[in-house]
Length: 333
Image (spheres, rainbow, N blue to C red):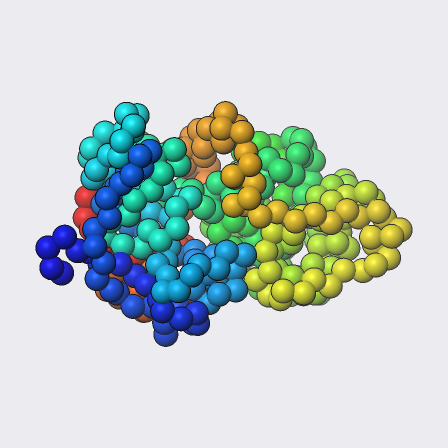
């Protein structure tokens, strides 16, 4: 790198991330009013980052485009009017786009200070998935003692939703596709996990709930898995559509919607976060930090790759594991 420049991960076309991403050289940016510059330590690779690179997400950047959203780093420079943070302070950011770089300029208002006891590997993934999970749980408006059901439960949000719900006294039936995924969740301390590969999986759900109504279903899969969730819901229950891991098309029984008055609503974490009251957002982040500190939620890491190895890090082989998030390292602390 020449003086005054940095590494930045960019793509000139939309396509498969392992084919289109490249490490480019860009000028080190300067923060404007209300902004700070971060020296990035670790960045987390999320599904929505990969979808954005493919051009299939709700947000489609202009090309050539940077990449990435969630990072942990240290404040390197302060913009005009920023007096609530200090140079060298460790923070996380999950609301600014284009942060897969040695340095990134972000809005100070979206930063979260990181406690000293929280490792970089956990801090780097604190915002997107954990906050999506706790915001989703808040959105569901369920009370302690009530039952909900979710599919794709071995995904990051599914695991976190089950853990956070348990800490609030909410019961969760977590559906997975294979016995091995069930064992993985049990290893994280999650109960009430059912594999739909079992012939008697519906009977297992009935035994777990002991006939109690399931008032909310969360669909993160799409396809026929949507109707599996709907089939378990009580009359006048709500299906919340969170994702489409298996298919962009949902299969839902019209009879269930008509005769059991099932309500279907969507949840997009980015939109919900933008519209959330600041005091509620602060309270939810406080709950998250407490849950991480107590071990109530887990943030496993599947692998850490140097930023120069980004194509390997985003490859199907690296991303195919459900054992945790894949991280990119830009700098040591």
